Image 1 (cartoon, helix red, strand yellow):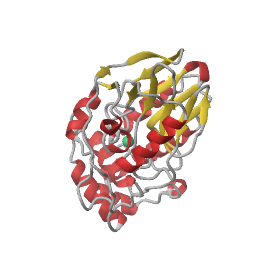
Image 2: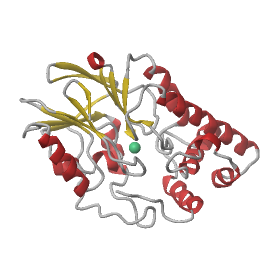
Image 3: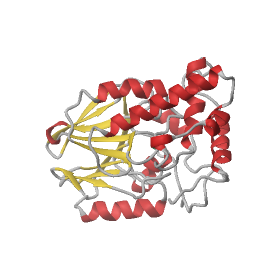
Image 4: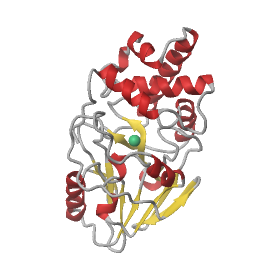
Length: 295
Ligand SMILES: [Zn+2]
């Protein structure tokens, strides 16, 4: 779908676990891709669409963050260079491209190879893409992960938000920060944007960040009460009524989000490290089995 002049969004429905969106910007000299896909099969489909839209052999890539759905296909695509926020290099090494068995329902991932970024930035990097200005921005705080960046096309009033925006799905802050994400929303709202391509879900507008904000405040509130009641994140999740958020995909993320929020509020996390494996195990328990993955 064309979302800006010569800028295409590649949507993978229904946007639940590992079904991410990507961006394709064909150019005669140097094309760009924003993110790839979770499996080799899905990456091949993305590449076929990119070729159809006019992407040639010279391709630069931007990774909005390190998660496998956005990066697993990068080595297969083998771009001329890969750009990301500086934190992504370490996060890629510490994280898992292919999740440990038992966390998700069975997926044929293919031969996934780790592809570290070639070029990294701390806060902002401006690119010239097809004769237009494109700004990569880290919003200054950990949010969905430590190294999230958004890709802003000011002339098109267009934003590829990566996983700072989930449309129709539950935001996931386990590997970032609930409070940091809220702080990023203030920065995001300063941008002049009409069209948002979320990391998952349908094309939307800036209102998506209002939904994300309401959910994150809901998580913080639950986390505060759970700390006061001296109950675990899993117990707090069982006790909670998701209300208006119950219709979103992957509601089990409430458990991971509570792990993160409670660690933040009680000061038991340091620099984004916490027991992610235990949080995932609790999510599987809450879900009553492996998390449903259609990748
Ligand atoms: Zn992600």
